[in-house]
Picture (cartoon, rainbow, N blue to C red):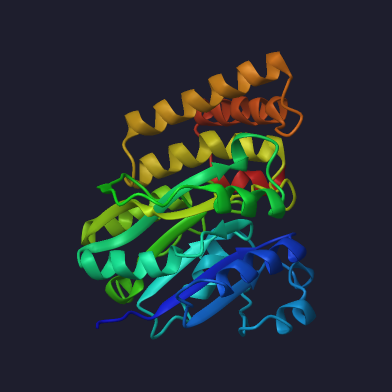
Length: 295
């Protein structure tokens, strides 16, 4: 039976304790990965003693730049033999069959270059979930579905890349999208789509805890919601119309949230301020994703 070499890859910041729990679930998979790699933004982002006590080795790789895109690229550069690189957030819990189903998907779909799964619950849409809550959601979920369908882009909290097909093609996560690197999943997916299909598979299930630590400030995030769309439209990985539509949707959502003021877990007012700064900079012709570094 054909097999693939799987690597689980995590760019992490500010969540050393949760990272350990995420990795416990990776190591409890019915099909274990060949490699597990973590790239921390800072030395304190990993508890090396706790990682060493886990039942599988975790490779710690360190780069020279901080940010989701930069850290993910640091990992990709050392994946010289892995067929599949599964990127998950440091607070994304995998259902036990995730990796087995992922391998089956890539074997059944040889044209697939990027895949993403079905998020059973996404804490980004609310106050977030504890590790215990996330595991309970997975345990209570019905058997995963079998539907596989094309999708415009993978969701960055769980995106698998057929690196054996993309290695050497100069496709990377864009490091001009700093810090949280908002929309880097869209950009990478659309670059990769030139070489194969981007698929969503219902059999790949998990829970995004969206723990409210280690995240970008509301103002910075709001600016990125506009600036990164403009940048990607100019780059050509999304259409101008699509970028403007997404930016407008973000502004409306943040404006409504700021007025309601009923989401203590999301800084809607800060995001709206960042949105408006992004719009102003766009009109002035000086918008750039990197401007959040000066905020």
